[in-house]
Each structure stands twice: as C-alpha cells, then as structure tokens.
Length: 65
Image (cartoon, rainbow, N blue to C red; front, side, top):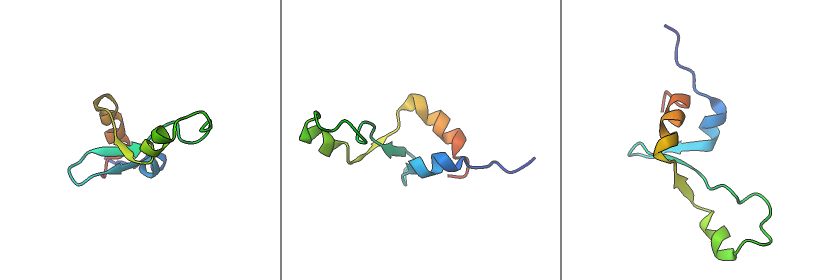
C-alpha cells in the first residue's frame, strides 16, 4: 500500500496542538474591514479551534500529523 500523502495546502492552513486539536485562522479578516468594529477585528487575530463537523475532513487531509 502506498504512503498516505499530506495535502500541502491544508498543512499550510491548519496547525495541530499538543493535545491533537486542529487550529485555523479566523475568517473575515482579509478585506471589508472598514465597517467592522475594532473589537471584532482584534478578536479575529487569534486562531480558532476547528469545528467537530470539519475535524474529520481535516484529519484526512493531514494523515501524518
């Protein structure tokens, strides 16, 4: 059986914590920031935990992590 390959696009977008959770960048921080509140944009700086519904999909894309 061949090796399971990592999807490199996913490897650049998701990070794995020491406990095995997947973290990703918050959406909505790239453009149209003029009308968004400063408090909201500051909150988007942090990484967020991937939802449980999407976790299995991310796990398939990152088999070696």
